[in-house]
Length: 334
Image 1 (cartoon, rainbow, N blue to C red):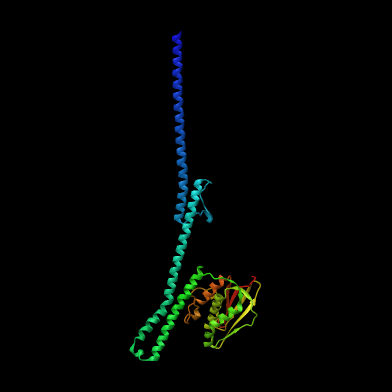
Image 2: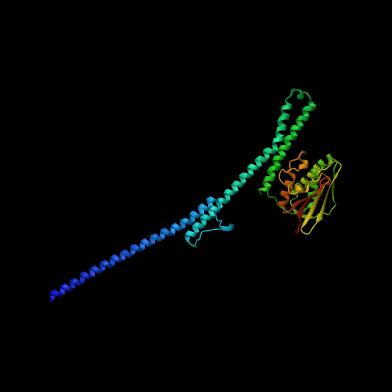
């Protein structure tokens, strides 16, 4: 009996060992399956995130970054996770890079346009300087003091024109691109008008043109006296250039609720109504004045200056009956 009991005890001990071993194997198998499942899920999740970033990079390269149907923003479905923050940062970096690239390309185009304009505008005075220089080397002209002085003066005038063109074009380009910023505040307009008239008085006197400024009590407008005087002198110079001798140019004022209107009225050749929107463009010359001296920069500069002061310039005219240019400046409490 004792032997039989011992066999039974041994048999039970063997069964317990086999059961424990199977349990360990099952536990290991389950752990392995769970690890494989976690690995598959992790790989799928990172592939999903990679596809999102790949979508962003691909859209960026195609120039369709963030644009869906009907021009609406299109973005991948990103949840608020650590990975989504990485994707968002990547999107911001690429957007900033695209902006910088476009700005660089725009600046490059502006530089090329500026160089092209300079080349075109400087071609004629430079050719005149070269021709005058060659003539000044002629012994026949060198022996004639009057002719020598005449050609020398013409050379200087062409050099001055080149210098003025370069300075004006660079100034206009810097104003247009926001590289020049000037303070604007309340200031008396009377001194500004006097400054502008003084700048063109000699040109008007040379053609016996009378400059008539309406009498008025000084008042403050929101403007920069130096730059506004330049804009007004450009309007006056334009009026003088295209007005006949022995005529008059009038400057008067109209106070309005928000703006004050400063008008420059001449008795010149006038402007075709179809050219109203063109005359303020850079280097534009009207068909009626293409053969006359001029650069097409004065009105363009005046408009740029007015815009920086939150003002504007308009024109009304009839061919053969003169023109009226109006500069609108904000009132002090406008």
